[in-house]
Each structure stands twice: as structure tokens, then as C-alpha cells.
Length: 401
Image 1: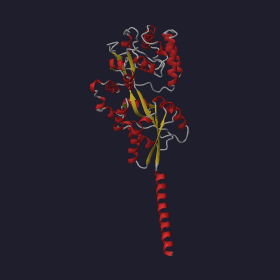
Image 2 (image 1 turned 120 degrees about the vertical axis):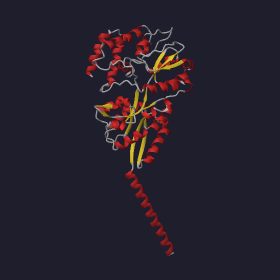
Image 3 (image 1 turned 180 degrees about the vertical axis):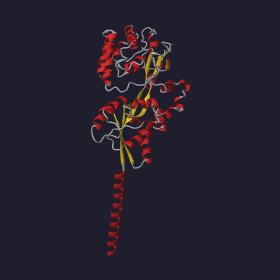
Image 4 (image 1 turned 120 degrees about the horizontal axis):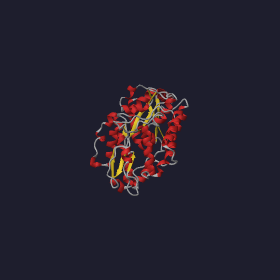
């Protein structure tokens, strides 16, 4: 009996010792674990891809743990701003350059040396600079191409001015420019070096706005150009109403699925250019809030997430262009088998990244500037305000910003 009691006591002691050691080990692991909170914008459909990258990083960077949260695109700015105002923001956030710039101007972001961004295209990282400091890590880019319906036209204009000189077929428009949508108008003006209060009313600007008025009055573009979005323009192209459409390469498959007859007649040429001969683009990026507890690890993970292999894999899943310069050199962006339109658009847009128009930067009130530009193009096109007067007022309002 005594022997049985002693055995039981020994077992209990062993269990207690083992439990203590396990608890101590877990406690040590919990203390040492570094958790990086990582936010993306509406990328949950790529969860397998993202989770694989996270797992791979965690395996080689113990005890780092990545907590991934995918945020709806419409809530990204609001939730990011709210979190940055706290003392516990996420460590790495996927945003647009415009909103990132606003945060940089508020001194709310971690900044780093240019050398940290050597893996990216130099032209893209310049988008993410304010006051000579770099505040963002490029994620991916897009660069629009020009589609045209070869059943309606066989001309291949290179510039907006060449396009504006073309006649429209009966019952069609040459194109549709979404003047009031975001910074569409400002991007076109920027291609003509019209990008400041000092240039908005110069001779070249007056010529360009006069052309806008002419094609609008002559019904070469839809009257809805002043109010509708690029999705409306896409619908008009798919219904055979537009001869040319400057749009993202990601919409080529949508045309294939929804308008096979138009798709069959669609051909692709480079994006329309202006005086600079350069192409505009859109960029998504990552930022690190200044209050991040682990900014160096967040940056290291961001650079791992956007390395050559990961960027190339992502580009093969979705019609985006890698910001990583080595990934962009891959044969995937140089060969189009069987003249596939999606592959051709990928080749053309990738090539355009080698000749990019410097974006409008350093503007503290970009949204207000977009509103002002939309107002004055409406004054000219709809209210018949003289181009000279409208642009002089535009200059005054821009200077106030």
C-alpha cells in the first residue's frame, strides 16, 4: 500500500515538473514572439498566395508572427487613419500613394533611405517621396493601354491630338474621357507639362482645353464624359459605341466575357501620350506607421513580400505589373503567344513602365484639386465659359491650395 502511495506521489511530481517546464517554455515563447500586424486592401481572394508567403517568412524569421487582416477597399483610408491616431496601429498597411502622401505630410509615417528600395523600379519609388524622404514601399503597378475596335477604324493614333483629329463613324464616338473622375484630367494635362498654377493657363493649356471643347460640341465624345466613370466608358466600348478606349489591361478579359464580338475586333496599341512622350501609371504601395512597434521587421517583411519570386507569382494570378524590377524582366512580360490580347496588353503596359511620366506630387490637397479641375472643365464644356477666363480662375483657385 505504501509502495503504491509513493508511486502515485512520484507520478504527480513528474507531471507537475513537466507541466511547469511546458508552461515556462510557452511563456518564454510568448514573451519572445514578435507579432507584425499586416493590412491589405481587398485581397482576400488571394488568401492562399498570401498565407503561403506569410508561412515561408515565419519559418525563416522565428519568433516573428504575421497577423494578416484584409480590409475592404472602401474602408481602407478611414480605418487606417483611425488606427494611426491610436498608440497601437498596424505595422504594415496597403494603401494608395495619394493617401499615403497625406499621412507623410502629417509626419505620421516611418521613412527610410532610398538604398532600402533598390529592388524596385527607380521611377516608381520616386512617387513615394516627400520632403526628400521615402515613405512607402511599392507593391504593384498598372499602366493603361489603348484599345480600338478595328471594325470601326483602322487608324492607330499615338497622341491625344492625333485622336481628336479623327472623324467618328455614324452612330459612334471616337472615345470617352472621364473628365470628372478622380485625377483623369490632371493626368492628361501632366502629359503636356501642365501641372502647376503657373502652367494651367499657358498657351499649351488653352490649346488643349479648346480641343476638349471642340470634340465635345461636335459630338465626338459622349455628353456623359463630364459625369460618368471609366466603367461607363467600358460599357459603351463593349456595346460598340466607342472606337477607342484608354483603359487598364485588367478590363480586356471583361470584354472577352461580356462582348465577344467586340473582343474579336479589338486591337491594342500603347497608351495615348502628350508632349512629354511618356506614359502615366497607377501604383499601390505599403506604408509603415510611425508608431509601429517593429518598423524594421515590418520593412523586412514588406521587402520579402515584394521580392522577385512573390511579385512574379502574383502577376501571373492577376493583371498587374510587378514593382520589382527583376520580376519585370521575366519572359512572362516579353512574349505573347498566339497574339492573345491579355498577353499583348501585358507586354505593352510592362514596356511602358520604362518610360513613365513623373506624377503630380507634393500637392497637399489632391482631392480638392480634382474637384476644382472637374468644376472648370464643366464650366467650359457645359456652361460655355470662355477657356481663357476659366483657366485664369482655375489658376487662382489652385494657388489658394
